[in-house]
Amino acid sequence: MVVFSLESVIESFEASTRDAGRVQIETLRRILEENSDAEYLQSLGLNGRTDPDSFKACVPLVTHPDLEPYIRRIADGDTSPVLTGKPISSISLSSGTTQGRPKLVPFNEELVKSTMQIYQTSYAFRNREFPIANGKALQFIYSSKQIMTRGGLTATTATTNVYRSEQFKRTMMDLQSQCCSPDEVIFGSDFHQSLYCHLLCGLIYSNEVQLVSSTFAHSIVHAFRTFEGVWKELCADIREGVLSSRITIPSMRAAVSELLKPDPELADSIYTKCTGLSNWYGVIPELWPNAKYVYGIMTGSMEPYLKKLRHYAGNLPLMSADYGSSEGWIGANVNPTLPPESATFAVLPDIGYFEFIPLEENGEQKLEQRPSTTSYAELEPVGLAEVEVGKEYEIVVTSFAGLYRYRLGDVVKVAGFYNSTPELKFVCRRSLLLTINIDKNTEKDLQLAVEEAAKLLAAEKLEVVDFSSHVDVSTEPGHYVIFWELNGDACEDVLSNCCDCLDRAFVDAGYISSRKVRSIGPLELRIVQRGTFQKILDHFLSLGAAVSQFKTPRCVGLSNSKVLQILNSNVMDSYFSAAYD
Ligand code: AMP
Image (cartoon, rainbow, N blue to C red):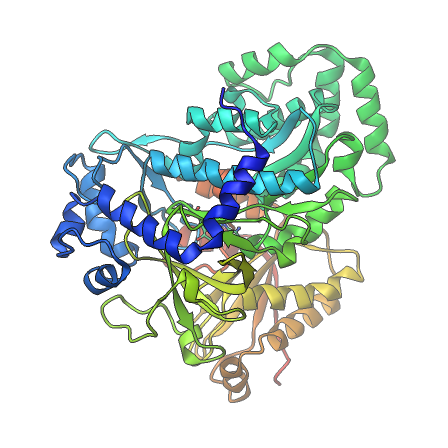
């Protein structure tokens, strides 16, 4: 086993960030040398040059559709060096919750390596502030289905590709964060059964658990919402030492039954603790008394779940995990004491080559719909060492896994520097969510509007379980539709006020002026039945998505007809805003 030293991880991070600009030039050189045989690079006429200026002059900025034909060839079995020098052995499926279908991206060992490097880096900093003892982690992690491409490559989500690597297990052992559940649970074919078993295994090892985590915070909130409904059954299983009949997958049953012994004392203690809680506040520290923190990605589209997560976590600190994507990792959270709302990610200058397209503050540039690669006239991307504090950028990635000048579509803000590498704050996806004419609203704008209106529910002790939106242009003029699932019944007056508040909370000048002249109709709030968002999750799972990477689609277009149909067929009430009457 590799002996993992926190000091040496911090030292190498310090060394690589001290002169991040130079490390970036070196990283680009390595990427281009290793992949100099790739057909894609050869066709662009680099002729062996590896310096940033030649790279920028020869290689165009691209988005996923530009590379899709190359990735498709790899998936179909072309083993020649298409995008990378060494052949690509697996394909990752990005979560695809925005577009409604997953994107294929190349996956290779380099991505496993950089994943471990990111995990180790943020762990080293986290552990300095919040040391954990040798123990286990209650991890809500799930794999997705693996499919074979036409060319015989495995295609699955990036997280699954990582979980099944040997290096992942070794690293997790080094990080004292071994999952309580056996592999049969993580790799089980039914998410609901896996979740139940994760909870059960977590309870069996309740005294050893040092942290509670998942990839995205949504999974933790989802797990504890489920726990509220199944806790008595879990207690019964522990009391009798017999696994619930709801677990029907033979391998999962066998593996979990092995761990489950009759333990009436533990069952009693869980029962007493649960009944003593008020509305499940602080359930995590109550049942896992040695847990030091809750860990997972809590930024970006996960922010709406923070309130509920804080409720379950009680006095335990919430620690936001690192920033990356199926395409590759970007930065680690090396300031673990910051609350998730202020979390930043220090870019690791040796895991990829990064460029940043400046987005003008409040200008058209920032809010424009993502232009096609051939026609955009934008500001030139700048290098990692040239970004400025306080400015926003779209991030461009060149990776060790065959992506060159690839626009990730994320907007980030430079919050500061760690040595000479930027610390990024995630702002939002760049693509617009809500637009009818001159109005432009992003995912973040929607989130802020929902937060504002949800304050009116708090007085009624109600909360928004989840939300989404849609632009309805089937009638003239078009209008915004917001879908809300609530955790209880609200009276009409309150919801009607929420609807007006939502409408007013979109402060984009284009929206306000369009509303005033009625070129956009009154905002509509549709309340959906409880469980609607669970149905959406189930729908994505049936398509092969993984819960570990699931992000609720915050805007559903007509192309995502199934999700729209789920939402619309579960509407109980609808309200139209009178805010601009
Ligand atoms: P996927 O390709 O399914 O892994 O999703 C990647 C996307 O998730 C990124 O492009 C971001 O938009 C989002 N994401 C990943 N990590 C974070 C993070 N730490 N904070 C906010 N959003 C994130």
